[in-house]
Each structure stands twice: as structure tokens, then as C-alpha cells.
Length: 631
Image 1 (cartoon, one colour):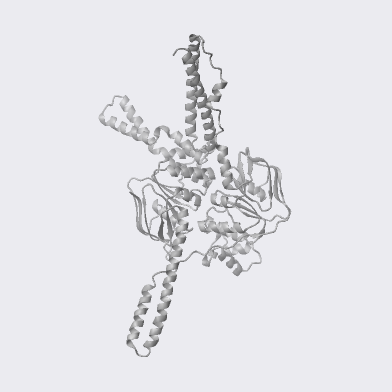
Image 2: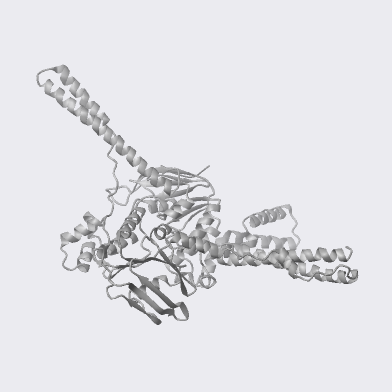
């Protein structure tokens, strides 16, 4: 069944070019579709049209009847003082209204109303309420909050005090809890840490509705979507697979079009030579030859059907490496940092040598960016010290790029940061970073997040450095720009320290992992894949002793005991069995609530396994006592 139909969609923000130019596609119910395209292709514009935020100039958008649509990029405005918990609970507005009506009907029935209509309505509401999970909303909220790293402290905070990324996570949680039929996800992983991203992927794998996702996260696309739609020149190109399929198929189509174009051009060239010869003969007065030449020229025109396929010119700028003298790049000695009563980390003792490539990982809010700022002297440690080698030269790309004077245009910004550079040299350098034509005279404040990152890199990538520090370098970049910065990092042979949630980037470059958790850093001198395997092993519950081994350690009643004594012990054993069964059931309930908290779930699983082993031992003891008691 068709869930969403888009036909002939046209949208323009200026008179020169349509950003959407006849876009047409259909999505079936339950599909997971990735919406691809470079920055500025019109993907977010399409989402704004789908949600009714803006209208199209032409074309139709048709949703299946009674389908609930949720967009993650839209952050609603809530009343002053509204907490995160209030926002999450607002997802149950429908069930809350049903509960209020059920209460009113219940009161009427208690007062003697036994009419068929009242009983029918109450039964109908009760069935719907139960089907929507109205009796167990707290468990659902806990699962989503744990998965998206919304801890108890954050759930008490006022929503309007959160950062943009935190608001995005809360809004994503609300949409999930609302039981939305169609999820529109606009770069959902940009503000999620690794744990929350993986939880979202797991959730989407079991989500019964339809998903349309804009994302430049290649791992996310590979794990969540089954079909890709690329917005290219305002129209839709279709790929029946995930991102990996799309990448291979797109290159195959390009090469096929190029071969077709080259074959066509070779045939045209051959015919043009023949036509030229015929025209030469026609000058001698041969009308028949002239007609053949004109016929051949028409044939050539009809053959000109294939435009030469093109690729966007790749960025080629690279980091300039500076030779490093010595062994130690920098060292942390007892470093600690706190903000008020909150300690981010303490007693950090780490050493970095030349040429290492280190990924700093950890959940949001753990202090990763703060640690990078300590290295850049933008913050200062409360305890300990940081020691750099004498020849270290640093380049730093912050997570949030800001320029001192955002009103300046791009050329003036580059001239200000690079004294002695001519205007033409500045324009040439900006062109190398895909800022061309009139774009170089735009003010910095009008740039998107990805454009700001590119401009900042333009100002630092010609400086010779031997320590490169990157904070979320691929955020806001489209896939082509991500591939460019990956190539630049690949060619850089100095020391690299970076924070990233882009698993493709981490896996490609990290040779050492620093995991920031619980105020300290665990140092793994391995790559990302090996680190993940180690973490998986650590999260497995410890093996417990077998029931047989435990049973042999317990004193068993000797055979031939008094049956009356055995019956007393049997009664005690039955009480212990009942208590142990209750303990197992309680652990199962806790495991269900902690289903998305991997560490807590593993610990509870180990406790449950141990409790079940004790229960088995008690049951074995019960059988022995029952035999002695003659039962």
C-alpha cells in the first residue's frame, strides 16, 4: 500500500533556478528509505513541504489517510517551566484524553448508568487504551530515555535550558513515544553519541511504521534503510538498496553513461567526417550528394541525445605536515576538571608519542570537548598539568565554528586571517574549497554549518602542523565533503587526536581509543573494531557455577531421617523457593526496564542467572526432602 506519493513537485526560492524541479516518487507502507543528495540539493526543503511548513510552487503530496507524521528537525515551543519529563509525557496526550473519558464513564456507571451505549463506549475505549500501552507508559518512557541518554537529572531540567542537540534528542524520544506512523528524520545522528545512535538503529529495525531519513552517516544508512532516493538537479534517482549498494550502483551508472556518451561521440565524429566529404562533392554541383549530406546532418542531430555525464569536482586541499622532533607530543599528569559540584574527570595520566592516531570516545556530556579545550588553552585544569613537546605545532577544528566578525564576507575573512595574501590568491584558495563566483562575497553569518567548517579549514589547512585536533570533523558535512576530509587526514602523517561519533571515520583512522567514562579515561591501544570486540566481551555476564556444583556444597539431609523432621524442613524449603521465584521475577522486570541500557542489562542478566541457579538447587533439595517425608 502506498504510504506517501509525491508527484511533480516544484519549488524555487529565486527566479533563476528550481531547487525541486518535478520531483516525483512513491513510498510503500513500512519501507525504510534514505534521502540522499549534497548539501543544498533540497532535501530539507522537501521535508518542510511534507509537514506543511512551506508550500510547493507546483505538484502534489498525498499521504495515506489517518497517518501520523513526525519530523525530528522540528522542535516545538513548550510553555515556560516545561521540563524534559513533561515533554516526554506529552507523547501520551491521546491516551491521557482516553483515560479522562474512561474515568468519566466509570463515574457514570458507578452512579447507576447501565445503558448499552455507555458500556459499549467504555469497552471500546478500554481496548484501545490497552492496545496503545496506556497501562504501562512509565516503562516505555524509561526505555526511550535510557536509549537516548536522557538520565534522571536531565529529565528534571527545563526544556528551554537545553542545548540544540539535547532538544533534538528529547524531541526524537517524544516522537518515538507518540507511536508515529511515518518518521521523517533529518540528520538524526548529528547530536547523538555512539550509544544513542546504536539504540536508535535497533529501535528502527523493529519500528512498524515508515521511515524517510536524511543522513550523511554511512553506517547509519547501511543499517537502517533498504532503499535510497537521491535528489539530483531537483529530480529523483532511485536505488533499490542501502548506502553501500547506492555507492557502487551510482559509480556503475556513471561509467555506463560515460561509455554510452563516448560511443555516441565516436559515431558522430565518423558521420561528421563523411558529411564533410559529401559537402565537398556537393560544391561540384551534385544535387544527389548534397541531399545525402543534409540527410546525414539530420541523422547526426538526432544522435545527440546523451549529455556528457559529470561528477562534482572533488576537494583536493590537504593538511600540511610539519616534521616532529622528539618522542613525546604531550603528556597529561594528574589532570582534573570540574564545573561547580560536577566533576568531569580527575587524575588523568596519559602520554602521546609522535604519529599516533587517537579517538576520544564517550557519551555526550562526559567532557570530551572540554578536554580538547584544555589542550588548546581555552580552558584550564583545576588540578594537574599538561606538558607539550618543544616542537609541537597544533591545528584545531572546533565542533562549533565561530568567526570573530561574522558580518565580513568570505574574501575579507580570509584576508584578515592570512596577512599578506592578495585578493586574487584569497579567491583562488576559496575556490579550492568550493566557494566560487558570487559566493565569496556572502557574509560569514549566512553560511550553513558545513560551509562554516569548510571555511575554517580553508584558514588553517595551509599551516604546517604536527598535531591535528578535530572535534566532530564530519558533523554537518555531506558525504562528498566527508570523503574529502578523510582523504586529507589519510595524507596527513602527523599526530591526530579527534572526537567523533562517525563510526566510519573512527574505524578508518583510530589506532588507539581513549574512552572517557565515569570521570576517567580507559586507554585501549587498539583500533575501533578490536575495541568494540573487547567491549562486547566485557559486557558479557560472568559464568556462574553450575547447579550441580552448588548443590554439592549444600548439606543434604541424611537418608533415614524422621519423616516428621523432613516435613518441617520441606515447609521451610518451599518458603525459600517462593522467595527465590519472586526474586527471579523481580529481576526479569528490571531487565525489561533496562533493555536499552547495555551495562545495567548485563549486570541484571548475571544476577538473574545466579538466582535461577539457586532456585534449581532449592528444587533439587525439595525433591530429596519430599522423598524422605514420604510425599
